[in-house]
Image (cartoon, rainbow, N blue to C red):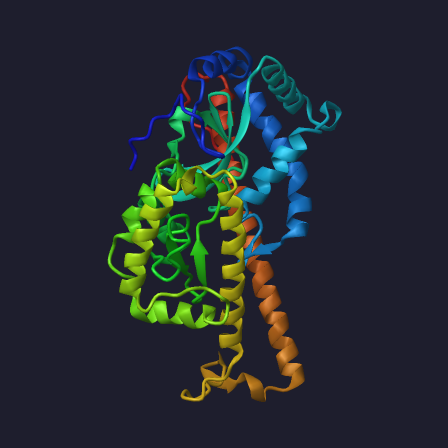
Length: 386
C-alpha cells in the first residue's frame, strides 16, 4: 500500500508521518534549513555521537542483538530529549552552525515531530519530521554499517503512515519474523487489538496496543480491525494454548476459535454502535489491559519452558572439537571455563568485525567525498588511495 498522501488537513494521528501544513513547512524549511543541509546533518550526527556511549551502557544488548541494533525508538527519544538542552559550545564549528539554523527554524514557527511508520515497505521506523525534511537519527539500527544519520526531503524518504492492520502485518512478518493471527480468543479487546503475535521462540503477545495503532483503527470506526478479524479462524492449537494461559486470569473466553471469530466481529459492531471509538478514556484502559494480558502470557511462557517434558527424552548438549562430540555436562570445570572464554572471544571478534565493516563503509564514503571535492587534474581521471 504505497498510495498514501504525504500531506493532510485532518488532525494527525499520534506520531503520524505526514505534512500537516505543507506550504508553510516547505517555506520555512527552504528559508532556514536547506541552505545549511550539510551542517544540519553534521549537527544531528554530533548529538547522536554524544549519546551513543550512554545508550550503549544503558542497554548493550536488546533481544539478543548488540547496540544499536533494534534500538531506533530508544535512540530517537534520547536525541529528542538532548535537543532541548544541547549547547553550542559542546559542538564542533560545523555542527554549531547546524544548531543555529535549527533554533532559528523553530523560532520562526517551524516544527519538529517524532514520527513512526512504514519505511520503504520493509521496516517500522522511528524518525523525525523537521519541517519538510525527513531526519533519521537511528539509520544504523537495522544495518549497522549504514550511516548513523540520514536527512532527506520528506517526499524522497518513502516513509508513509500505517493505514491498516494488513499493511502492519506485512511488515511485521518480515521485520520481526513473527507469525501473526487474528485475535479470535479475546473478543472484547479485538476491536482495539485485533492481532495475536507468535515470535520465533514461541512467545505469544496481544498486539498492538500503541497510541498510533489504537488511534488508527479508532479513527476508522474499527474498520481496519474488522478486516483482519473477518479472516479465517485462528489455528485451533494456538487458540487452545492462549486459553490455557489465560484460563485462571478472569477473562471470558470463547468455546472455539470459530466462536471467537463470530464474537470478535460482533464486538466491532457493538462497540462502534456504543461509540467506544470516540471515547477518549478508552485507549488508556485498553493499553493497561493489554499489558496485563501480555504479562500473563509471558509468565505462562516461562513456566512452560521451565517444566520438564516427560514425553521427550532429554537431549544432552554437545560440542564438536576436532570432529569429536563431547557432552557439555561431563566436561571438567576447567574445560567449561576455557569454553566460556572462547565464546566470549568469539563475541568480541564479531563486534570487531562489525566495527571494521562500518569503518570500511565510512572510509569509502570519505574517499568518494574527497574525489568530489578535488579539482580536476588535466590528463588524469582517477585517484588512488591505499
